[in-house]
Image (cartoon, rainbow, N blue to C red):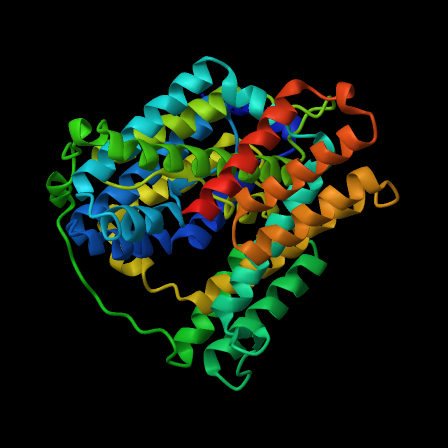
Length: 435
């Protein structure tokens, strides 16, 4: 049985082992564990019961990650998307006055549309339209993005009204612990230790506990509380005209955030084929769309692929076993969520920072001597972290690439979908400005 599973997941082809894959899945889970508490904290402001959203968050993350690993065989973990949950809460429910049940209906419909686009091959064509020359730029931009998040979470950088960001308080104990974690992981990586990320996170956590920097507040909840949100979506309300705009935003943002994450993680893992395509793409998109549908049914906002999957890839994860491991841990977290909550930012931030460093390395493959490629790549690299949006960075890259192709008389060499994509991005910017 074990040999059959190794053959199915392609262990030999990827040069991996059960130990490596399971450790990678655990690493991904640890870097993503914050969503178990952050997502319910955001969505509960809509009036949704906290206990119910906590359970639904774990459940749909488990379902999506296990489905991704099983049918697509990729080390991509899924969970309710950050940014999309904020849009759900602050713009749709609190800003527009839409009941959370109706908002869930909009999420469900966007997931169904995702499935239809996947079966029709539209999502695959959209990804194929992204020039492969930009793949490394997307990966590098997301690397800078998650490194920026890690630096902020660690307290190494803080907001500044004069310079936007500035150096934080290096005398703060939590910041010093984060710096310790960075040094520890860096030394382990220098010695080629595959579990460097996991050891670094757990080692930093242990030191934090010894120095009384980890505050543990036990709490309990009943997993059956999910009944307060499960199947409570209002499809009729979501189908009304004033909800079509909401469905479009859920659809659009998730589509391009997911594409950006997908390109970045597969690029980093070396899973892109020689012809610059991503194998089993239809199965990847099917898993993503299905998780969004299940998430809406259970009672949470849009589910998407997580860039923190890069931490598992950096730990050696190359197959679906990594995602399955992460999914199983999310399921177990339904019952042990209070313990998961004890992992503070200063312990996970070092992993995010150094995963970012690994992902930026791919920028060396960009042809910096060719302006048609260098300029769109640079715009992609710089705007992803500075706008705090993968979709926005990808927008700048696609639009500038399309403009330069047309301006230099090379327009016919690109697929028409590239220009359709650029037009959609321009529409996105116009829509955002109008809003």
